[in-house]
Amino acid sequence: MDQKKICPRFEKALKILNHSWNTLLIYQLLEGPQRYSTIKNNVGISSRVLTERLKELEIENIVERTVIPSTPVVIEYKLTEKGHALAPVLKAIEQWSSMWVNIEE
Amino acid sequence: MDQKKICPRFEKALKILNHSWNTLLIYQLLEGPQRYSTIKNNVGISSRVLTERLKELEIENIVERTVIPSTPVVIEYKLTEKGHALAPVLKAIEQWSSMWVNIEE
DNA sequence: TTTTTAGCTTACATTTCGTAACTTAGTTTA
DNA sequence: TAAACTAAGTTACGAAATGTAAGCTAAAAA
View 1 (tube, rainbow over the protein chains, first blue to last red):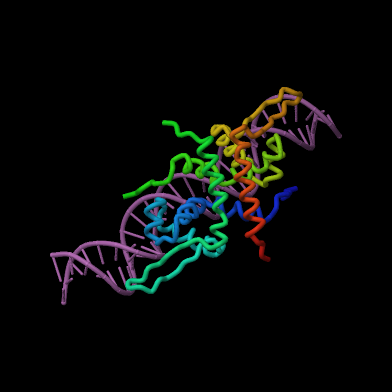
View 2: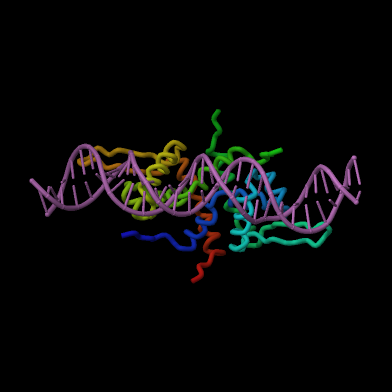
């Protein structure tokens, strides 16, 4: 009785992108590689959820985590090629929002 | 200490689009006007959440609810102009998913 | 007259999320 | 040298969101 006529790749894409914070995190990382604390401060996400999401995005091969062996070590997060390929999606949302979304008081 | 450098319109757009099911519902309604039960069956969402989301999308002026006074009455949901304007976003996600998302077993 | 359908609503259990405090290791300050 | 601080998380726990299932109302079909 339950039909799934929608393409499974598309559904999976939505599952990732709709998971709260993920799109905002990707948007933030489009600015360039960043450290954990920078992301946290700029996005306003809790560390618990941030860690969770970064792990998820890493597993999905959208984000890459790098340990830079300086002293002290710096941990850097950046978009993979797959992650960068999401730029048009974010651009489209940006355009739509500038055209149609208004903020009320 | 918490900075919000991101555009508020964009943030609001993400808030709407990232709310679970919303993007999928919009995608489904891009097919054309549909009744409650049709949406429910095609998307695989529970009625509790479907009602909630349709209300939200109506308030955001993305979806319009129409009562067609036939006998029995038919209730139709369709995208507004603002809703249709999201088509490029969905298209971009579709393209990305066909290029980068793979389904594993 | 009983059953079915559409379009919801309600109650309740499960899952997810946010808040805040804690941890570990190295680092600067006093 | 001890005390305090920072980065990058982890843990515990209460609050909020979600899914499941059952119920409801009005009309229609059997």
